[in-house]
Amino acid sequence: MTHHSRPHAHPRARALALAAGAAALAVTLTACGSAATSGTDHGGAAHGTTTAAAPTAGTTTTAAAPTGAHQGHGVPAVPEPAASSTPTTAAPSAERNGYRLTSDTGTLAAGTPAAYRFAVTAPDGTRLTAYRTEQTERMHFYAVRSDLTGFQHLHPEMAADGTWTAPLAALTPGTWRTYASFVPDSGPGSGSGLVLSRTVTVPGEGADAAAGLPAATGTTTVDGYTVTVEGSPVAGRAGELEVTFARDGAPVTDLQPYLETFAHLTAFRAGDQAFAHLHPETRAEANGTGGPTLTFHAEMPAAGDWRLFLQFRTGGQLHTAGLTLTVA
Image (cartoon, rainbow, N blue to C red; front, side, top):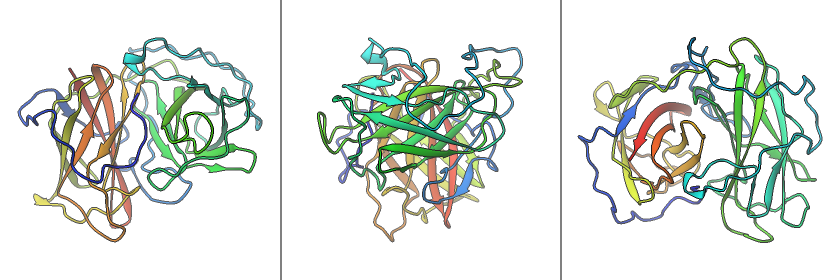
C-alpha cells in the first residue's frame, strides 16, 4: 500500500517514460457531475465531497447486512475482517503493523449528514493520540462507495482521548469503505505512514446495486476546466503521471495551494478497493500559483482498473475530477 507522505521537494528521476498515446489511461467525471464534486475548502469539512449517484440497475455487488440503526459514540464494537495476507494487492485492512482502526459504527442512515467516530489503537493497546502532521493535517479520512461512485475526503477533529469525528456528508444506500491515512508520531513505526480501513453499511433502496466504471476517454471537464492526463504506470514500478489543466482552450496557471501542493490525487482499485496516494513532485509555496502541468510520482501496488480522484483549487473553490486508470 502506498502511504501518505510529504510531497517530493525535487523531481524524481523518470523511471517510466510518459506515453501520451498510450491507451492505458482514461479520465472521466465522477458520477455526480461538477455540481456535486466541487466545494469551498473549510477546515474539518468535506473537501471536494461527492455522494454516489443512483446505481445502475441490473449490476449488483454484495452489501453487508445492516447491523442496526443505532450510531454509537464509543469505540469499538463492530468486528472487521482480518488483515489481507496478500500484500502485493495492498488490500484494505483494519489492522496493520500492530495498529488497528476501531469504530462502533457499522450502519449509517442514508440521505443525512452523520458524525462518524473512530479511533486508532496502538500496538500496546492504548489509543494513539500522537500524530505527525502530513500535508498540513494529522489525519486524512476518506469514504468511498464500493462501486467507486461516491467519494469524500475529510480532515476530522480529534478529542483529547484519541477519538476522531469525521463530519460525513449524506451518503447514498450501499456499502461504503472508510480509510484513515496518518503517520504515528510515537511508538513502534513512528514516522511511517499507515492507511487503515473499515466498512460501513447504508441501508436503503438500491443498496445492492452497483454502477460500472465510466467509459475510457483521454480528457474530461469539471466546473469548466479541462483535465488531461498522460502516463502508463506499471504495477510495482516507479513511474510518473502528467496532469494538464486548461480552461476555454487556454492553459490554467492560477492553481492555488491545497494541502501543500497544487493538486491532491488518491486512487482506489476496482474490486478490492485497495488504496494508493500519488505524490506531486513539486511543493506549493504558500502564496504561489501553479499550472498548467503537474507531475505526480505514481507507484501503484497492483495491476487492474483504478479510480483516481484529483482535487485542485482555483479562486478559493475546490474541484474534484474522477479518473479511471488502467495499471498494467
